[in-house]
View 1: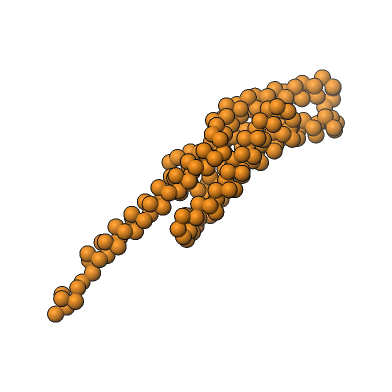
View 2: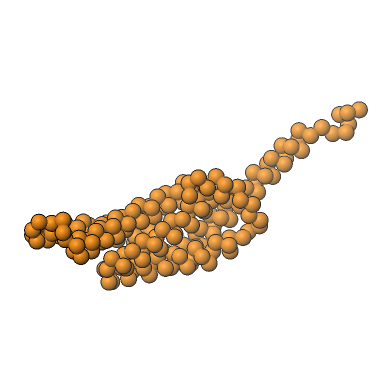
Length: 183
């Protein structure tokens, strides 16, 4: 994603065209909100994994749109990435737990297995606990409000680009020699 970022910034997008992103961005944001609510209502590894996938989808979209307002959107992307890492660690631990419970051959005594599984469960609960307030901040707005805010960044970015282009054209016109200067 990082390697493609400079190329993405230079994509020729004509006119307004935020609609290219709008519906997908709004849908992914809404799905992330729902997945978070479901994960905490039914805290299973599968529910938290589904939420993680939605967080990653939003993270990727924000990475693509970060050029609109780099300071703001790169920070948002970082927070989404952090959340996806917490949820990814939770998922990895859930898979590890399932694996050792299904095949406890590496443990000499049952109490070792029980201790290991308990430590995994505690770490997962900690990851889920730190994920919640971050998720609540990232998914605070209604989907339409979130998308409209990104759209306003888009409009400002487009206007800034048009102003820069107009300034360059003015400079070029000022520096162009007139026919009178060749006489």
